[in-house]
Image 1 (cartoon, rainbow, N blue to C red):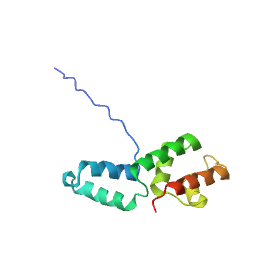
Image 2 (tube, helix red, strand yellow):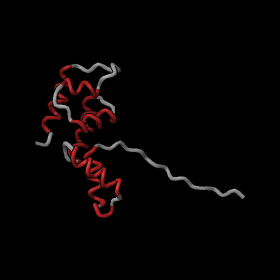
Image 3 (tube, rainbow, N blue to C red):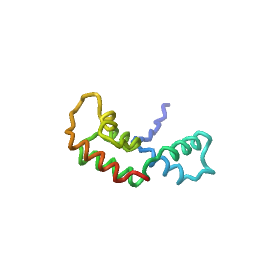
Image 4 (cartoon, rainbow, N blue to C red):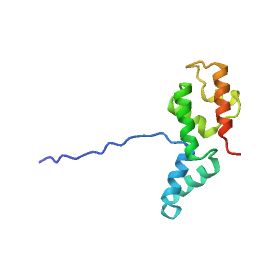
Length: 115
């Protein structure tokens, strides 16, 4: 007789580096395995804003500037400080974004960058 196996649906969510850091810190370093500790070390070194700011920036980049969530996450992870650096993340020629919008994005990022 065949047994029906229930499968659990897993929802995928793209996270920024600061959001990963917050999740791992919330678990507690003593509960992390070796790989998770290495990830925590990495995200601690490379977080450029806190988790709440990262989430807000991704949301603004998506809603106000029409970026895809994956693009916005990569931008927040790297926090480019010039239009030229920002263009690297928007390359590929899929869409052309006005220079004024690019400047506004850089201004937004610079306003929230950790000093």
